[in-house]
Length: 87
Image (cartoon, rainbow, N blue to C red; front, side, top):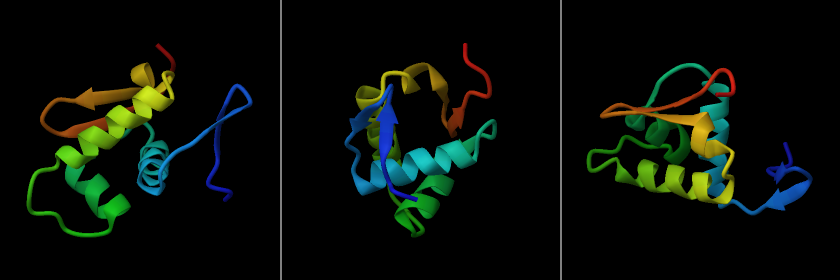
């Protein structure tokens, strides 16, 4: 509810879209979320072009929160999934 993210007690600065994307992926834990679903959920509109913007935002999340590198699984040609259990 505060729109804040901390890792080991250290605040992580995220953009509004990065935060929304992280929240959408967290809520869908264990399910494959298509890029189109994430665009509609986070960006709030039907998108008829490239879905690369989702990939770019996921990359930024992984850079800002290295723990997500293993936690967010890329499902080739489909989208993303949050790993249900740590690797």
